[in-house]
Length: 191
Image 1: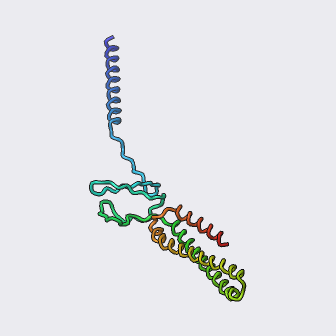
Image 2 (image 1 turned 180 degrees about the vertical axis):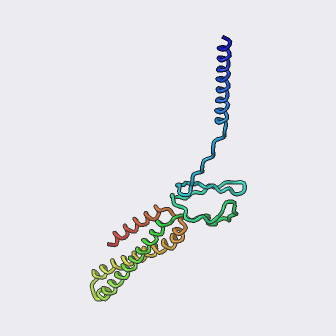
């Protein structure tokens, strides 16, 4: 019986030692810090950034009138800037296209004006020898030529004003679409 008690005691001691070793080993493994992972690359990830420039003792929020892609940043963080200095360039394809459309419209109006002036020169001798009815009929093309000249002046002024603004992206696209519609209306009135 004594031998049985000793064997049971040895088996129990062995079980306690094995259990304690298992617990110590598992606690050590659980208490290790996690392995650091690789940081993801953000080079090709889409990005939307809203900028805030903080001058001395005040804040200024920057944002374009129309959503555009930034093509070039001309200042660095912390750099001093002056009033009116260009900070960045926006994609201005739409505005450049509108300037090209306005220039083509200008050429079209110039050629139409030349045609009307030629027509006026051909019909002018008839007005000298004809009755008052012919003279009245000639007044209509003269007035039409004057109208085209004034519209041509307006288009020239508009192109001169909007060309530098379109290069910097300061004018929204809807202004150009309104002017394109206005040009179509004028073209329909002339025809």
